[in-house]
Image (tube, rainbow, N blue to C red):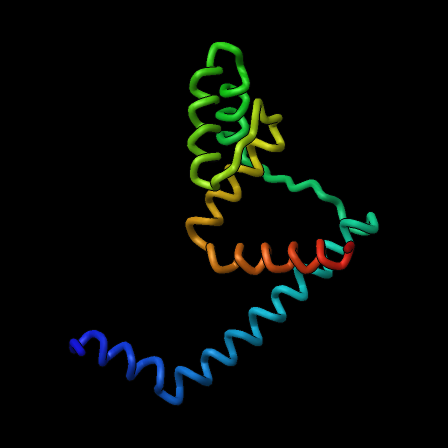
Length: 129
């Protein structure tokens, strides 16, 4: 075993690491439950599906992308977003474009948290079976 492998093994078997892992699992479960509750609120109409943000420069950027003269640029961005997420979206509406953009950003900075969202979505879908 290399020194790096030994260090990694020590880290994984250290008492503190196991306690942290249990704590992280508890926090993850609580976060997933919170997401599940919000999904139920959306399903029952208690919470809106819409998101909003006040950002003038970003609004101007999106509005410019929506112009026919910038269709090639918009399509290239959509293609890159879809590729990053491994999805296909044909001619997305503004809300779909913004959702793709937000998901890519969150995927890059909070991928583990998005994994929790996916778990909650799978659980929610399983309830309907």
